[in-house]
Length: 361
Ligand SMILES: *Cc1c(COP(=O)(O)O)cnc(C)c1O
Image 1: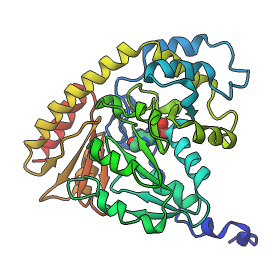
Image 2: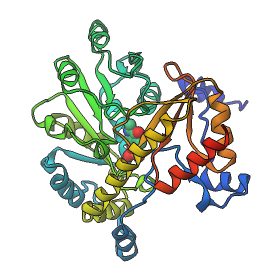
Image 3: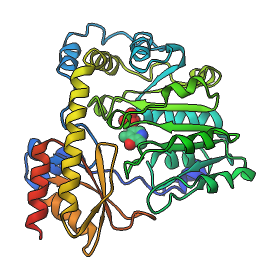
Protein backbone atom coordinates (compact mmCIF):
# COMPACT_ATOMS: atom_id res chain seq x y z
CA UNK A 1 0.00 0.00 0.00
CA UNK A 2 1.33 3.43 -0.91
CA UNK A 3 2.19 5.69 2.03
CA UNK A 4 -0.22 8.35 0.78
CA UNK A 5 -3.09 5.87 0.35
CA UNK A 6 -5.10 7.77 2.96
CA UNK A 7 -5.19 10.81 0.67
CA UNK A 8 -7.60 8.99 -1.64
CA UNK A 9 -11.24 9.96 -1.03
CA UNK A 10 -12.37 7.37 1.57
CA UNK A 11 -15.56 6.47 -0.31
CA UNK A 12 -13.51 5.69 -3.42
CA UNK A 13 -10.79 3.87 -1.49
CA UNK A 14 -13.55 1.57 -0.17
CA UNK A 15 -15.11 0.97 -3.61
CA UNK A 16 -14.80 -2.48 -5.15
CA UNK A 17 -12.55 -2.41 -8.23
CA UNK A 18 -14.27 -2.30 -11.58
CA UNK A 19 -14.23 -5.62 -13.44
CA UNK A 20 -13.59 -4.68 -17.04
CA UNK A 21 -15.01 -6.73 -19.90
CA UNK A 22 -12.39 -8.56 -21.95
CA UNK A 23 -11.80 -6.44 -25.05
CA UNK A 24 -12.89 -7.91 -28.33
CA UNK A 25 -9.39 -8.23 -29.84
CA UNK A 26 -7.92 -9.82 -26.70
CA UNK A 27 -10.74 -12.34 -26.64
CA UNK A 28 -10.26 -13.12 -30.30
CA UNK A 29 -6.58 -13.90 -29.65
CA UNK A 30 -7.39 -15.94 -26.57
CA UNK A 31 -9.95 -18.07 -28.44
CA UNK A 32 -7.90 -18.27 -31.62
CA UNK A 33 -10.90 -17.00 -33.57
CA UNK A 34 -10.43 -14.02 -35.94
CA UNK A 35 -12.18 -10.88 -34.62
CA UNK A 36 -14.45 -10.71 -37.67
CA UNK A 37 -15.72 -14.24 -36.94
CA UNK A 38 -16.71 -13.48 -33.35
CA UNK A 39 -20.45 -13.09 -32.99
CA UNK A 40 -20.90 -10.34 -30.45
CA UNK A 41 -24.37 -10.48 -28.94
CA UNK A 42 -23.47 -9.29 -25.44
CA UNK A 43 -23.72 -5.49 -25.47
CA UNK A 44 -26.73 -4.62 -27.67
CA UNK A 45 -24.54 -3.06 -30.34
CA UNK A 46 -25.85 -2.78 -33.90
CA UNK A 47 -24.55 -5.62 -36.10
CA UNK A 48 -25.23 -3.55 -39.24
CA UNK A 49 -22.81 -0.86 -38.10
CA UNK A 50 -22.96 2.81 -39.06
CA UNK A 51 -24.39 4.31 -42.24
CA UNK A 52 -21.90 4.25 -45.17
CA UNK A 53 -22.24 8.05 -45.15
CA UNK A 54 -20.54 8.07 -41.74
CA UNK A 55 -17.31 6.61 -43.17
CA UNK A 56 -17.40 9.08 -46.04
CA UNK A 57 -18.04 12.07 -43.76
CA UNK A 58 -15.28 11.04 -41.34
CA UNK A 59 -12.79 10.67 -44.19
CA UNK A 60 -13.69 14.11 -45.54
CA UNK A 61 -13.91 16.02 -42.25
CA UNK A 62 -11.41 18.90 -42.51
CA UNK A 63 -11.43 20.23 -38.91
CA UNK A 64 -10.02 17.54 -36.60
CA UNK A 65 -7.33 20.04 -35.51
CA UNK A 66 -9.92 22.57 -34.27
CA UNK A 67 -11.70 22.26 -30.91
CA UNK A 68 -15.34 21.29 -31.26
CA UNK A 69 -18.32 23.62 -30.77
CA UNK A 70 -19.16 23.45 -27.03
CA UNK A 71 -22.80 24.12 -27.92
CA UNK A 72 -23.00 21.36 -30.58
CA UNK A 73 -25.07 23.85 -32.58
CA UNK A 74 -25.36 22.02 -35.90
CA UNK A 75 -25.99 18.63 -34.31
CA UNK A 76 -28.65 20.03 -31.98
CA UNK A 77 -30.35 21.64 -35.00
CA UNK A 78 -30.37 18.32 -36.86
CA UNK A 79 -31.59 16.54 -33.72
CA UNK A 80 -34.38 19.06 -33.42
CA UNK A 81 -35.66 17.92 -36.83
CA UNK A 82 -35.22 14.25 -35.92
CA UNK A 83 -36.99 14.48 -32.55
CA UNK A 84 -39.46 17.27 -33.28
CA UNK A 85 -38.29 19.14 -30.18
CA UNK A 86 -36.78 22.64 -30.30
CA UNK A 87 -32.96 22.65 -30.21
CA UNK A 88 -33.06 24.80 -27.07
CA UNK A 89 -34.25 21.71 -25.16
CA UNK A 90 -31.41 19.48 -26.39
CA UNK A 91 -28.03 18.88 -24.75
CA UNK A 92 -25.51 16.56 -26.43
CA UNK A 93 -23.22 14.31 -24.40
CA UNK A 94 -20.28 11.91 -24.76
CA UNK A 95 -22.79 9.08 -24.86
CA UNK A 96 -25.97 9.01 -22.82
CA UNK A 97 -23.72 7.67 -20.05
CA UNK A 98 -22.09 11.07 -19.64
CA UNK A 99 -25.48 12.74 -19.33
CA UNK A 100 -26.53 10.29 -16.59
CA UNK A 101 -23.44 11.32 -14.62
CA UNK A 102 -24.04 15.03 -15.27
CA UNK A 103 -27.69 14.84 -14.21
CA UNK A 104 -26.72 13.15 -10.95
CA UNK A 105 -23.98 15.71 -10.34
CA UNK A 106 -26.45 18.52 -10.97
CA UNK A 107 -29.00 17.33 -8.39
CA UNK A 108 -27.24 15.07 -5.91
CA UNK A 109 -25.00 16.09 -3.05
CA UNK A 110 -23.80 13.37 -0.64
CA UNK A 111 -26.76 11.79 1.12
CA UNK A 112 -29.43 12.82 -1.40
CA UNK A 113 -31.61 9.94 -2.55
CA UNK A 114 -31.98 8.49 -6.05
CA UNK A 115 -34.58 5.86 -6.96
CA UNK A 116 -33.29 2.98 -9.05
CA UNK A 117 -35.58 0.25 -10.38
CA UNK A 118 -33.58 -2.95 -10.84
CA UNK A 119 -33.19 -5.14 -12.76
CA UNK A 120 -32.11 -2.32 -15.05
CA UNK A 121 -29.14 -0.57 -16.64
CA UNK A 122 -26.19 -0.42 -14.22
CA UNK A 123 -24.98 3.14 -14.75
CA UNK A 124 -27.65 4.78 -12.57
CA UNK A 125 -26.32 2.84 -9.60
CA UNK A 126 -22.68 3.40 -10.54
CA UNK A 127 -22.96 7.18 -10.94
CA UNK A 128 -25.15 7.62 -7.87
CA UNK A 129 -22.62 5.80 -5.71
CA UNK A 130 -19.71 7.66 -7.30
CA UNK A 131 -21.36 10.97 -6.47
CA UNK A 132 -22.14 10.00 -2.87
CA UNK A 133 -25.89 9.69 -3.41
CA UNK A 134 -28.06 7.23 -1.51
CA UNK A 135 -29.74 4.60 -3.68
CA UNK A 136 -33.29 3.53 -3.02
CA UNK A 137 -33.77 0.28 -4.93
CA UNK A 138 -37.36 -0.40 -5.90
CA UNK A 139 -37.19 -3.90 -7.29
CA UNK A 140 -39.33 -4.53 -10.38
CA UNK A 141 -42.07 -7.18 -10.14
CA UNK A 142 -41.30 -10.72 -11.45
CA UNK A 143 -42.51 -9.71 -14.93
CA UNK A 144 -40.22 -6.62 -14.77
CA UNK A 145 -43.06 -4.12 -14.43
CA UNK A 146 -42.46 -1.03 -12.36
CA UNK A 147 -43.92 -1.09 -8.86
CA UNK A 148 -45.27 2.48 -8.89
CA UNK A 149 -46.91 2.11 -5.49
CA UNK A 150 -43.60 1.15 -3.92
CA UNK A 151 -42.06 4.19 -5.63
CA UNK A 152 -44.79 6.39 -4.14
CA UNK A 153 -44.07 5.00 -0.67
CA UNK A 154 -40.48 6.33 -0.82
CA UNK A 155 -41.62 9.97 -0.88
CA UNK A 156 -40.97 10.51 2.86
CA UNK A 157 -37.25 10.00 2.03
CA UNK A 158 -37.47 12.95 -0.40
CA UNK A 159 -35.78 11.28 -3.38
CA UNK A 160 -34.66 13.85 -5.95
CA UNK A 161 -34.39 11.65 -9.03
CA UNK A 162 -35.86 8.45 -10.43
CA UNK A 163 -34.27 6.65 -13.37
CA UNK A 164 -36.55 4.60 -15.64
CA UNK A 165 -35.48 2.80 -18.79
CA UNK A 166 -38.07 2.21 -21.52
CA UNK A 167 -37.73 -0.19 -23.24
CA UNK A 168 -36.00 -1.53 -20.14
CA UNK A 169 -32.57 -3.11 -20.31
CA UNK A 170 -32.36 -6.14 -19.76
CA UNK A 171 -35.94 -7.36 -20.37
CA UNK A 172 -37.09 -5.11 -23.24
CA UNK A 173 -40.43 -4.16 -21.67
CA UNK A 174 -42.00 -0.72 -22.17
CA UNK A 175 -43.23 1.61 -19.42
CA UNK A 176 -46.98 2.23 -19.88
CA UNK A 177 -48.19 5.84 -20.22
CA UNK A 178 -50.28 5.52 -17.06
CA UNK A 179 -47.20 4.59 -14.98
CA UNK A 180 -45.18 7.47 -16.37
CA UNK A 181 -48.01 9.87 -15.51
CA UNK A 182 -48.05 8.60 -11.93
CA UNK A 183 -44.30 9.18 -11.63
CA UNK A 184 -44.55 12.66 -13.14
CA UNK A 185 -47.13 13.58 -10.48
CA UNK A 186 -44.50 12.97 -7.77
CA UNK A 187 -42.26 15.76 -6.42
CA UNK A 188 -39.08 14.57 -8.14
CA UNK A 189 -37.28 14.56 -11.48
CA UNK A 190 -38.10 11.62 -13.77
CA UNK A 191 -35.22 10.60 -16.03
CA UNK A 192 -36.60 8.42 -18.82
CA UNK A 193 -33.80 6.59 -20.64
CA UNK A 194 -34.92 5.86 -24.20
CA UNK A 195 -31.66 4.29 -25.42
CA UNK A 196 -33.66 1.64 -27.35
CA UNK A 197 -36.69 3.71 -28.38
CA UNK A 198 -36.11 3.37 -32.14
CA UNK A 199 -36.71 -0.38 -31.75
CA UNK A 200 -40.10 0.12 -30.07
CA UNK A 201 -41.45 3.48 -31.24
CA UNK A 202 -43.51 5.70 -29.00
CA UNK A 203 -40.88 8.16 -27.74
CA UNK A 204 -41.96 10.48 -24.94
CA UNK A 205 -39.49 13.20 -26.05
CA UNK A 206 -42.45 15.53 -26.71
CA UNK A 207 -43.69 15.02 -23.16
CA UNK A 208 -40.79 17.14 -21.91
CA UNK A 209 -42.53 20.20 -23.36
CA UNK A 210 -45.50 19.61 -21.05
CA UNK A 211 -43.67 18.33 -17.95
CA UNK A 212 -41.12 20.46 -16.12
CA UNK A 213 -39.85 17.41 -14.19
CA UNK A 214 -39.15 15.08 -17.13
CA UNK A 215 -35.81 14.43 -18.84
CA UNK A 216 -35.62 12.05 -21.81
CA UNK A 217 -32.25 10.50 -22.74
CA UNK A 218 -31.44 9.15 -26.19
CA UNK A 219 -28.34 7.82 -27.93
CA UNK A 220 -26.81 7.00 -31.33
CA UNK A 221 -25.16 3.88 -29.88
CA UNK A 222 -27.88 1.35 -30.60
CA UNK A 223 -30.12 2.29 -33.54
CA UNK A 224 -27.43 4.22 -35.48
CA UNK A 225 -24.53 1.85 -34.81
CA UNK A 226 -22.24 4.49 -33.28
CA UNK A 227 -21.51 2.95 -29.85
CA UNK A 228 -17.77 3.36 -30.38
CA UNK A 229 -18.03 7.09 -31.12
CA UNK A 230 -19.99 8.00 -27.96
CA UNK A 231 -22.83 10.32 -28.93
CA UNK A 232 -25.89 10.67 -26.74
CA UNK A 233 -28.31 13.49 -26.05
CA UNK A 234 -31.03 14.53 -23.70
CA UNK A 235 -34.28 16.46 -24.01
CA UNK A 236 -34.45 18.77 -21.00
CA UNK A 237 -36.88 21.34 -19.62
CA UNK A 238 -35.24 24.79 -20.02
CA UNK A 239 -34.79 25.31 -16.30
CA UNK A 240 -32.68 22.13 -16.03
CA UNK A 241 -30.79 22.48 -19.34
CA UNK A 242 -29.52 25.93 -18.36
CA UNK A 243 -27.83 24.60 -15.23
CA UNK A 244 -26.59 21.43 -16.92
CA UNK A 245 -24.70 23.51 -19.49
CA UNK A 246 -22.81 25.22 -16.64
CA UNK A 247 -21.27 21.95 -15.42
CA UNK A 248 -20.66 20.20 -18.75
CA UNK A 249 -17.04 20.00 -19.94
CA UNK A 250 -16.94 22.42 -22.89
CA UNK A 251 -15.42 19.87 -25.30
CA UNK A 252 -17.28 16.78 -24.12
CA UNK A 253 -18.43 15.90 -27.64
CA UNK A 254 -15.63 15.47 -30.16
CA UNK A 255 -15.49 16.38 -33.85
CA UNK A 256 -15.52 12.78 -35.11
CA UNK A 257 -18.59 11.88 -33.06
CA UNK A 258 -20.39 15.02 -34.18
CA UNK A 259 -19.56 14.42 -37.84
CA UNK A 260 -20.73 10.81 -37.60
CA UNK A 261 -23.97 11.76 -35.86
CA UNK A 262 -24.74 14.41 -38.49
CA UNK A 263 -24.05 11.93 -41.31
CA UNK A 264 -26.37 9.43 -39.56
CA UNK A 265 -29.17 11.99 -39.35
CA UNK A 266 -28.61 12.54 -43.06
CA UNK A 267 -29.30 8.84 -43.67
CA UNK A 268 -32.17 8.11 -41.29
CA UNK A 269 -34.14 6.03 -43.82
CA UNK A 270 -31.18 3.68 -44.31
CA UNK A 271 -30.63 3.31 -40.57
CA UNK A 272 -34.33 2.79 -39.81
CA UNK A 273 -34.37 0.10 -42.47
CA UNK A 274 -31.68 -1.71 -40.45
CA UNK A 275 -33.79 -1.17 -37.34
CA UNK A 276 -36.72 -2.83 -39.16
CA UNK A 277 -34.47 -5.79 -40.05
CA UNK A 278 -33.47 -6.11 -36.40
CA UNK A 279 -37.12 -5.94 -35.30
CA UNK A 280 -38.02 -8.74 -37.74
CA UNK A 281 -35.03 -10.76 -36.59
CA UNK A 282 -36.07 -10.23 -32.97
CA UNK A 283 -39.35 -12.03 -33.65
CA UNK A 284 -37.60 -14.90 -35.43
CA UNK A 285 -35.07 -15.21 -32.62
CA UNK A 286 -37.80 -15.10 -29.96
CA UNK A 287 -39.76 -17.94 -31.60
CA UNK A 288 -36.62 -20.01 -32.06
CA UNK A 289 -35.43 -19.50 -28.46
CA UNK A 290 -38.86 -20.42 -27.10
CA UNK A 291 -38.50 -23.83 -28.75
CA UNK A 292 -35.58 -24.82 -26.51
CA UNK A 293 -36.93 -26.48 -23.39
CA UNK A 294 -34.16 -24.90 -21.27
CA UNK A 295 -34.92 -21.31 -22.35
CA UNK A 296 -37.83 -19.04 -21.46
CA UNK A 297 -37.52 -15.82 -23.49
CA UNK A 298 -39.36 -12.63 -22.49
CA UNK A 299 -41.13 -10.60 -25.19
CA UNK A 300 -38.95 -7.57 -26.02
CA UNK A 301 -39.44 -4.18 -27.65
CA UNK A 302 -35.69 -3.59 -27.89
CA UNK A 303 -32.76 -5.14 -29.81
CA UNK A 304 -32.13 -7.91 -27.29
CA UNK A 305 -33.99 -10.79 -25.68
CA UNK A 306 -33.73 -11.79 -22.05
CA UNK A 307 -34.12 -15.51 -21.29
CA UNK A 308 -34.55 -17.43 -18.10
CA UNK A 309 -32.42 -20.56 -18.22
CA UNK A 310 -34.14 -23.54 -16.61
CA UNK A 311 -32.75 -26.91 -15.76
CA UNK A 312 -29.18 -26.08 -16.70
CA UNK A 313 -26.36 -23.84 -15.60
CA UNK A 314 -26.67 -20.42 -17.28
CA UNK A 315 -23.04 -19.48 -16.55
CA UNK A 316 -21.82 -22.71 -18.16
CA UNK A 317 -24.07 -22.09 -21.16
CA UNK A 318 -22.64 -18.61 -21.63
CA UNK A 319 -19.10 -19.96 -21.29
CA UNK A 320 -19.65 -22.75 -23.77
CA UNK A 321 -21.04 -20.31 -26.33
CA UNK A 322 -18.04 -18.02 -25.73
CA UNK A 323 -15.68 -20.91 -26.48
CA UNK A 324 -17.42 -21.13 -29.86
CA UNK A 325 -16.97 -17.39 -30.44
CA UNK A 326 -20.56 -16.41 -29.60
CA UNK A 327 -20.74 -13.79 -26.86
CA UNK A 328 -23.89 -13.28 -24.82
CA UNK A 329 -24.55 -11.60 -21.47
CA UNK A 330 -25.06 -13.65 -18.31
CA UNK A 331 -26.67 -12.24 -15.16
CA UNK A 332 -26.80 -13.53 -11.64
CA UNK A 333 -28.08 -10.49 -9.75
CA UNK A 334 -31.30 -10.35 -7.67
CA UNK A 335 -34.32 -10.80 -9.93
CA UNK A 336 -32.05 -12.14 -12.70
CA UNK A 337 -30.77 -15.39 -11.22
CA UNK A 338 -29.96 -17.76 -14.05
CA UNK A 339 -30.76 -15.33 -16.86
CA UNK A 340 -29.00 -14.58 -20.12
CA UNK A 341 -29.48 -11.66 -22.50
CA UNK A 342 -28.91 -12.08 -26.22
CA UNK A 343 -28.59 -9.08 -28.54
CA UNK A 344 -30.43 -9.37 -31.84
CA UNK A 345 -27.93 -9.49 -34.70
CA UNK A 346 -28.16 -10.38 -38.37
CA UNK A 347 -30.00 -13.52 -39.57
CA UNK A 348 -26.62 -15.25 -39.90
CA UNK A 349 -25.86 -14.47 -36.23
CA UNK A 350 -29.17 -16.02 -35.18
CA UNK A 351 -28.42 -19.11 -37.25
CA UNK A 352 -24.97 -19.56 -35.71
CA UNK A 353 -26.42 -19.11 -32.22
CA UNK A 354 -29.23 -21.60 -32.85
CA UNK A 355 -26.74 -24.13 -34.23
CA UNK A 356 -24.58 -23.80 -31.15
CA UNK A 357 -27.57 -24.08 -28.83
CA UNK A 358 -28.89 -27.16 -30.65
CA UNK A 359 -25.50 -28.84 -30.58
CA UNK A 360 -25.51 -28.47 -26.80
CA UNK A 361 -28.81 -30.34 -26.53
C1 LIG B 1 -26.54 1.17 -23.92
C2 LIG B 1 -27.30 2.02 -22.96
C3 LIG B 1 -26.94 3.34 -22.73
C4 LIG B 1 -25.61 3.86 -23.22
O1 LIG B 1 -25.73 4.87 -24.09
P1 LIG B 1 -24.37 5.55 -24.61
O2 LIG B 1 -24.90 6.65 -25.45
O3 LIG B 1 -23.63 4.51 -25.39
O4 LIG B 1 -23.61 6.02 -23.42
C5 LIG B 1 -27.75 4.14 -21.95
N1 LIG B 1 -28.84 3.63 -21.36
C6 LIG B 1 -29.19 2.34 -21.53
C7 LIG B 1 -30.40 1.82 -20.87
C8 LIG B 1 -28.42 1.49 -22.32
O5 LIG B 1 -28.72 0.20 -22.41
